[in-house]
Image 1 (cartoon, rainbow, N blue to C red):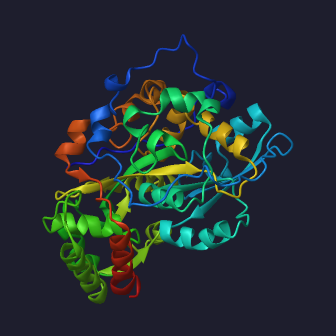
Image 2: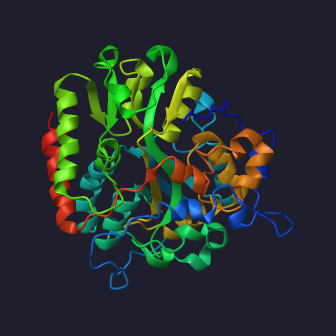
Length: 415
């Protein structure tokens, strides 16, 4: 599949405050089935069911919310996941939110990997200790674990009218968080092949193309096993959203371990894999879609390319949650709701190039950049998902989750 070129990101010509205005009743928005990200597209890769667990936070005593007296908010997110104004590393949308609300937001790129972040904060949260964050952003399967372990607060959807109106229908009632009582989708994205066409000297179309001798030691892969092992399993003919078992998973890990030992794979890393690509130590790898488009802009190099391998790719979503010990839930909900204004969501999507979860954002994107409004990386159709064999990694039960994580840690991360 030929990748669609990524246009240079650019801020809107209107002032930020005007860009981020609330959607008015007179503003026409496309119906859900009329958008490029049709209901069928997300339904084709619906979030997996979580492992069985207790869930529910109604029995917990929540900390006092002091949002009225403390106009502050601290948000932990992944790298390259918000609109940033060049080298100033300021976000126009976040600045506009602070001007509109008077809430001072401290934004940090704390999350490099779901497991490592959870391992850092979960003991503190279980002990009732502050992690000095009011929002954290984690992937579907980890979101399910956080909810199951009662480490996040319930949300007051009545206080978030934009979310209620504009969250795409397939995302409103996910299995790991029925009725969206504890989490809100931030962005969705794909895992596939990212590479520099000029440095590689050719197109990379299949996963096998990564294992060429001239690329030895210049390949990075993701530490999220659902993406890296998932892509390898697909290349081995496994249907990853179906009923595979340990044998198929372990065969993929054996292959990855072999490529590490043979020197093809330079590093297995979380979001910090971008450092290797930026420095030139790596020129290709198993990557996330939006990161490569951001890399192209940040380096000024249009040769950076993302594509779905011929054997298929993965789809995932990341979600905003309020940690159980936060004392600024109301402030957090205001920010979540703000980013569900279609005009604001479109501006973020124009910079990060991940799949936008907000109804009406595609129509707003047409005002910013008509080419991006047609991008399947931001507004994929059901046909694009199906024809590219893009799948979600099937849900693991609690025992499998432990077993597979241990195998991954031993065979791959231990190298």
